[in-house]
Image 1 (tube, rainbow, N blue to C red):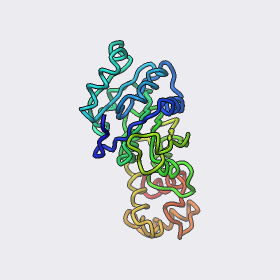
Image 2: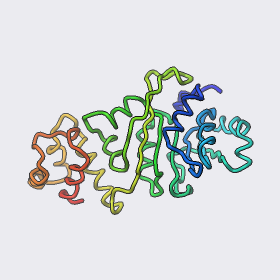
Image 3: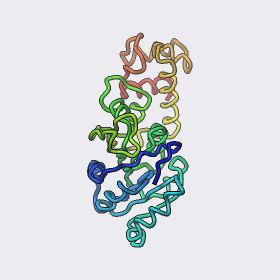
Image 4: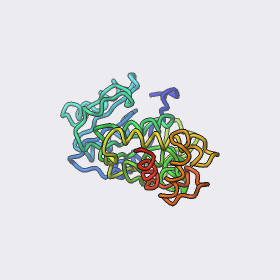
Length: 258
């Protein structure tokens, strides 16, 4: 099957790599797995060998029939479901609570997919994704924060599992990839209003990267209130958004009207 560039398809070529990804997810025999974009089914095979049930959501209609033919037996037993659709509009509420996500996702919508999964009302217990190496490093290893890294850390505990070289895919992407695991996913906010306010403050803080955080936040609150918030949290007035840890962001949101 020819990969479609428009859909960001890069198919895994090696079963051993798929096995390592499935192992990194820490699956149990009673796990229910949501797989995004099964493609040719390489990772699907590894998931079926380790989990109780796999629900695979595929946006490419041309891949559905080959997948159904290749996995006729697990489809017949109910161990596998294949659903056609875009994960960004998929109803995660139809999944059982405690499900986990394991997927090789289209890299151009990585942030959108992560946001969809973490902000859903019916959240996964854990998420294991094959993403660009730079993205995984930015979330887990960088000393500088970003909108994405703070968003992930607000909901769970991210870890960098291992690197996957670009030659492991067909077609080969221009960059290496990595397996990102997010464990202990929990609703971090008491209600949706606080959640919305947190991201409003976060987006304002990162709106202009060259400006000081205090200046960026003036889009949301008077300078006097921001000065008081910085004083109460012990922040330097010249601090920038990328230098602020998650715990301090939460304090700021509380003071600024969270």
